[in-house]
Image (cartoon, rainbow, N blue to C red; front, top):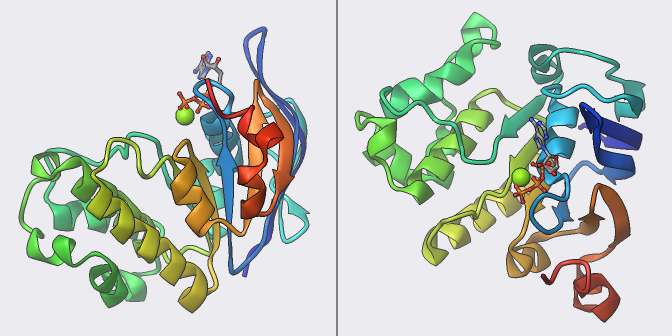
Length: 233
Ligand SMILES: Nc1ncnc2c1ncn2[C@@H]1O[C@H](COP(=O)(O)OP(=O)(O)OP(=O)(O)O)[C@@H](O)[C@H]1O
Ligand SMILES: [Mg+2]
């Protein structure tokens, strides 16, 4: 079980500050959603957590131990799996080969695709030989989540998994995320712009606006007008 805590993190791109004193906690066996408009720093936050973008102040900790400036692969070895925005699957590799890219950091004896990946996303089993680039957007998203699960993570970090995806697959993905929380006790950190998806799934929500956490609370708080004001254009 992994608890993630982000403590007063600042992140800059050159002179431009993308995160300001951002703090949040994601607990094991729970789904934490970060919401915010375009360009408010959601992906930057996830890149900081996964080690893809350095921070200039603050700390990111797993179970109270700081990650410091650990590289992405070190964080992955500690149990963090990342499903980036836009999915970044390999278009020319088959579905099976895409899933196998998750093997790299596993000990030899664990280099197989766990059956629960196919229980969660049966379409992947049907399409094992198909090229990644030939899947629909929704199928690619399921593949990206499946690939993350192959690494046997304890903390799953997802960047806008519903972006550009049809409603029936959004439902499947939501069910899968709930299953991972309920049955495996995963810590799930989810960035979203799709309010209804978060309201259904989230145990805790954080609202980012211009790089700052402007509100946090339980999913029901998303219906408060002052919270909504940070989300509507
Ligand atoms: N590599 C980069 N170099 C310079 N500026 C960047 C870089 N990546 C992001 N930014 C800027 O940092 C700010 C936050 O971007 P970020 O991608 O984190 O936002 P976001 O909330 O994920 O947006 P979206 O909802 O569009 O995905 C934006 O102003 C963006 O232009
Ligand atoms: Mg983003």
